[in-house]
Length: 75
Image (cartoon, rainbow, N blue to C red; front, side, top):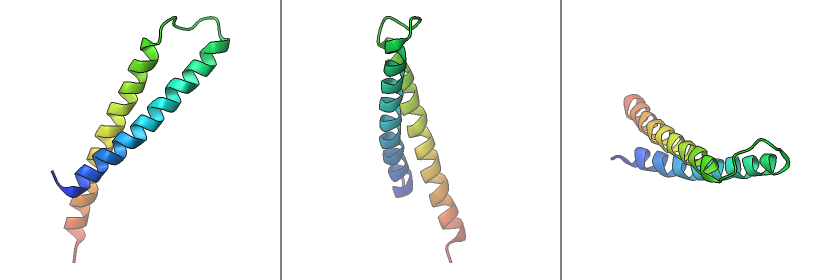
């Protein structure tokens, strides 16, 4: 694993964790005043974990592509 991929995975994990946490918080705030919301916290956790996984995957892919472009255009 090259350095760019590692940084991309770390950056994706951080962004995904923050995004997932804000998504879960926003969902909880919206549902605290609504009548038709899930009665359990599991759907919020599943959505937050999916967001984390997607962000980690996209971060790793972006890091790999950036390193590949850098090596391709390096003079």
